[in-house]
Image 1: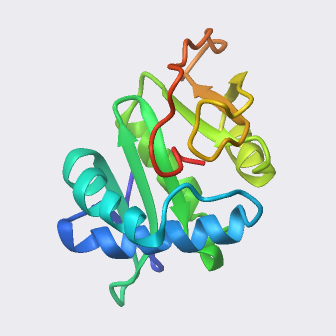
Image 2: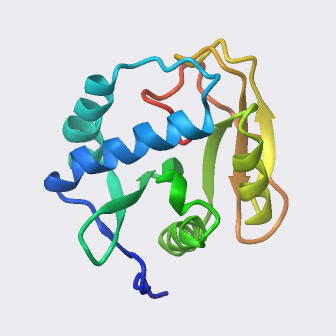
Length: 174
């Protein structure tokens, strides 16, 4: 799979990408989830990207020819922990490219969590072969927002997921 296209290149994030990737997260979250309470300040989100995600997780960014970071994806084992795009990049194939890369990197399958209110994300993941594997009332995440848990496997139905009571920090791929 090629990570190149005329409008953006997908590559592993470096320390220099942490702040622009966090800023993509902030813009995307604000645009896609305006009614969902954020559990962390802008500075806390930026510190999480800088101190946790980029150095300790498989973090990918989409970078334009001019060098602007316009998308971010984080894989944590078999979990698609984050997938956020600049709002003006939605619907232009960038999310499709990130998911194709994630499936290539995790050919045995992926799991993810998104908020129930995020209908566009739920449609996007369903269109890409993810199936709903469970729901929560939100009591286990920092935002207190009901979740949908999705699973993708290359073949066969989704198996039961035993999710931990606590949720991941800063959005969890919502």
